[in-house]
Length: 249
Image 1 (cartoon, rainbow, N blue to C red):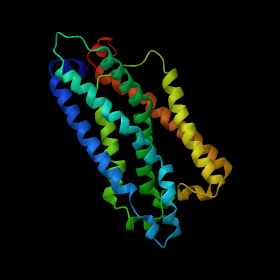
Image 2 (image 1 turned 120 degrees about the vertical axis):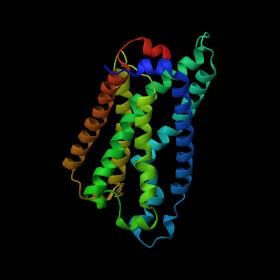
Image 3 (image 1 turned 180 degrees about the vertical axis):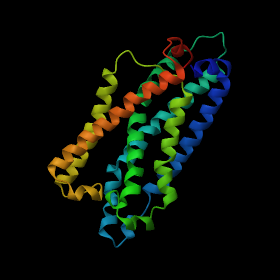
């Protein structure tokens, strides 16, 4: 069976350099994108559906998963840089080992499921009925390329990270599921409180009944858990289930 573990052992420096390049490029892109998009001046628009984005932009699920990524990448850069500089006969420093564990826990339990769910759903709705996501007049302020910067670049990043970083299944899913559930519950609470105030984070929510909102909530939980559990199948296929993976991750 194909297993990246053997390839990694033979080319560990190349893997580390590739990951460092990917992390630095992604972090630069993320910061530039954040500055450009968060400073869009919707206040100059005469369209009331656009002016609401002055406050609602912080409630968009895209904003949430991108904010999650901001502290993650510096951790990855530090860990991989230390690993690249470490001599083969020297043990991994305890603080680096702890940061590795934090990196893997943070990625597998939050970043990957949150990003994949949001990006895949975004493009599905984009190709089905864009008006469910945003007023069409938003095109005057946010181009298609900027949409790709938000929803395609992040998708590519998590897939590369999933493939290039050695990981293995945790002994228990309990803490990961708890963390992901807290994240989802927090976001659903934000959307619900906005709805009760007459604010619609997404135009499609205007036509939602209580039943539809409950269905959406269930869909979000099932969708996130699908990506959460599915990643372990990919990890098993790429890296196997050997405990030795932990030593070289």
